[in-house]
Image (cartoon, rainbow, N blue to C red; front, top):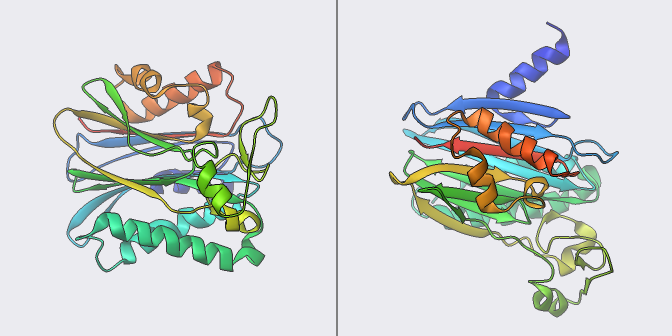
Length: 283
């Protein structure tokens, strides 16, 4: 086995994907019926892959945590890579993580963004969106996001979006109140100050005065009607609705294969962006 092949195997084992094409899987020790799989595919742009994923189960303080995240960089791969290494660490450091999880997640998002801005000289320009999901003891799911990567849960075959797409057109008033503007040129999407196509993100120091990094946080109880969770970057959601993604895998029992199915369907629909997809099967 070559050095590159060994590195790929190591990254797959711990659920870290960032190359032109990555795939991986894992399962809960608490409930062996709960499994996860992911697929990452580089888009058609000339820059390096800017999507990074985390997908792993971890034992912490006699609890099991499923840690899942997609970080979608723009003009940067250093910032999403930094988030992959640090955001969950910062969340779990919060002293009231177990008692006030949603508040802890929100504070950790803010602290991480502050650190990224302070390290702008090393991490460079650009930024990253993020969607994170923490599955606590296979019973409670806490989702947070900034940007347009998305978390969708399926209950009884019906898709329910847990995250919020932070689009400039929806947050125009807040952006303008900060002194910025939202452009909409023919053939293009709305952009903050004519540049960024999301209203919230980590980093982006040059735009931060007009840009928010406030996450939306939501929680969901995992019950017997909950079938699976999908986390995906906008390379999926630009070409598929939530329900279409759910329907694509409703008859697939293998989480890794399910993530691959959604990715392949997005490619068949001519998605040109970087694509990352994580599926967590709950039965």
